[in-house]
Amino acid sequence: MADLLTDVRSVLITTPLYWQHITQYFPEDLLRRQPLPGEWSALECLQHLVQMDQSVLPVRVKAILAGESFPPFLPSTQSTPLSDVAAVDLAAEFMALRTENIQLFDTLTPADLSKQGQHLQFGWVAMETQLAEWAAHDMMHTVQAQQALMQPYIAQVGPWMPYFATHLADKSKVNSLD
Image (cartoon, rainbow, N blue to C red; front, top):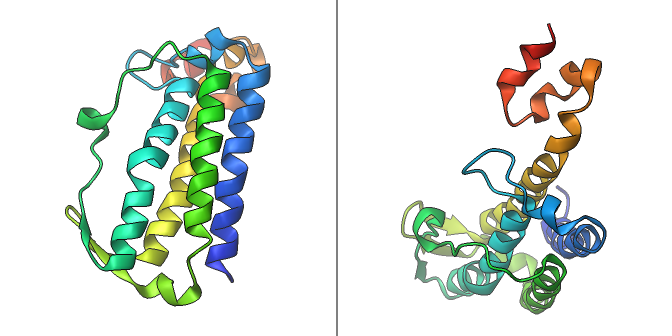
């Protein structure tokens, strides 16, 4: 990537816009539908992104700028159960948080990219690594959400199932048409 700050900013701005659109147009029950028991629904992916923007990513950026340490995030112990908040309201909360975090992001300069903070699990981490992780994390959970949303449609594609095999949550169904 030629300009990491510009490229990451593009991802960070785009992600909440995506969530605003899908929560406005997709039915709530589809957004809450888990692809398989124990796997995250699209809405759980959004809730996780909200939690990261609330209490993890800005903390990490500030710690790295100060050369300090920061704790790992452990989803199995630190995530909160999905609430009854409407999807569109959760997307609005995400947009507000991300807008604040973009303001923090916009204070970063190319000189800040080499600054390091200590992740208590992974060791010393440079700002450029943390920013790449932030963008990749956004995209990873967007893809995860899209795959969760696809499941009821994939189940009905009939002879086209092999084309969707990599996106099917229950891989045992791929061969059910042979």
